[in-house]
Image (cartoon, rainbow, N blue to C red; front, top):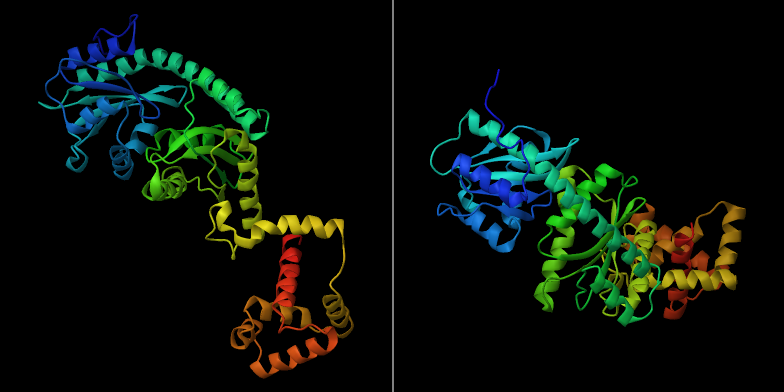
Length: 411
């Protein structure tokens, strides 16, 4: 039976005191992070260290390349699933020396991590036991910190919903309220939506929250989950085309990493145009919703469209659909073809649609219809005779094409 005294079974004023105690006992540098890899405490008075620890202390969070490497090597997966210390060999490419780490847990939920840099000799069983005891002592401090942050997060969620629903129309009031809850609003922003296959439960939300908080190449200012969607207000870290390009790459990376690390891939995503006034957040939210809606209705045509400005004419279809519902006037030529198809079980409407879709290219349209080109030309002659449609007119072709797209939108 273990008779070693528990040197951590006492009150500590702070996480720094716990870090210093671990460091003094093990004679190694120590850092303590929260669950999102933000630095919350580190031991002092150690000349021996490595570049990863230095960068963490300077930046107050673990560098992105270190986090990515830990995931790639399977180390984060071990830490998240084990209650025992995990030994990590040096990874020179990211400046990481030999380490031992342990997750700080409460009822299975990871609250943070203690990292110990082994730079002389491997720590023995007594040291590993003391590290487990330190994790127990740090738990209460991290729970208090988590409670404070959740309260802050709830204020942020409430404020975000107020913006999304147009509750505030004054730019001055919006900025004052943001300052009151400690949110710095960037000069411009975008609303990004990620839609998942199922409703976002507590487990998925923790995984999403981890990804949101560890994203370092984009600034996620506000986020909230609603049913099966994650709603984000985000911005590039820097201006110019380079900053926008890096930001868009990171948006894509966010979705890919959710799949790789947690098997929680969004099934659909969409974003608004970039905006500046925060009184326009509601409009930006509607733009992002429109992207999701249109990508669901036109998955093949809009598979490469990520932002509202990339929708092209598709963004006008909902307005045209509203107009058609208010003034339901049927196109005379299409009405004649529809009636002819009903009476003769023909497919002239579909034939016309394929010709319009392929911009009058007989070869491509015939291949799509699985018929010979001569058969297609015969059908087109019948279409012209029955409907009086003039396909030599660009206005006529645009009108017909939009009619088909509206039918597809409302199907």
